[in-house]
Length: 181
Image (cartoon, rainbow, N blue to C red; front, top):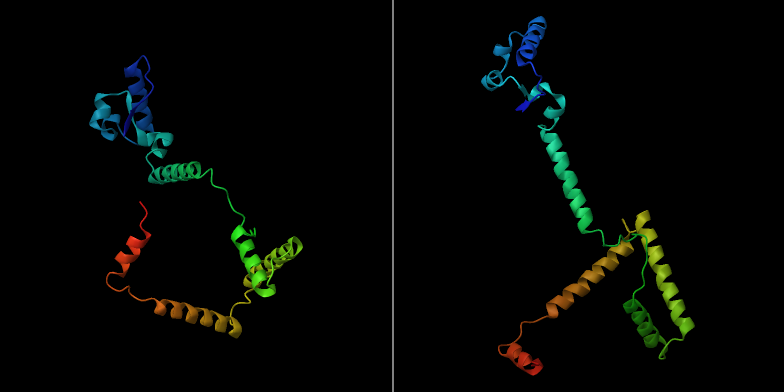
């Protein structure tokens, strides 16, 4: 790629100085080394002679700039999303309701505030111990864990096999019954 070089007031002097330097370095005559465009326009220089301009022609630089722009754009678009701590344990309101339902099923009465707090603490402790056990790899090669996972898969398979295709007209009847305008 040819780019314009800084012009001096005396083109002939600049070209003759350059020809002398090229002959001294053994590169030959200006007319032999330059393209016809450079010969016709002595104020143009081949960009390969200027290292900083050659840098802009590198595909690696193009790749790095494009990757940086993609990264910056993605970061900008997702700046509002909160970064969750993977070690954070969160007890949701649904889990609290489940704790309360389990208490009612077991003791036939609603839990007091202290009993509910104890149930939440127990759930939290159970989650901490579960995560630690996973990090230690205690779930690997354990017969009891395998049996429990197999049992859960059997339960799922039973539930799926219990599903049936609705009878003709059953879907339409359900839709008509539950239609709200």
